[in-house]
Length: 68
Image (tube, rainbow, N blue to C red):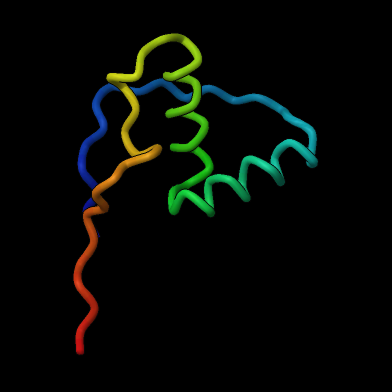
């Protein structure tokens, strides 16, 4: 399935502890998003750019309805 374009982005790699990653993964899963997007959205908030948050705390999810 095609994904919407998220604009120009840069790959950033960092090594974090297994314990921290486990928490990041759990929080991303709970928010229904990838760990990568969760990190990107939280980083945008940390640097004062809430306009660049793509998925975190979205009130409206773009999902197909379940077939009955």
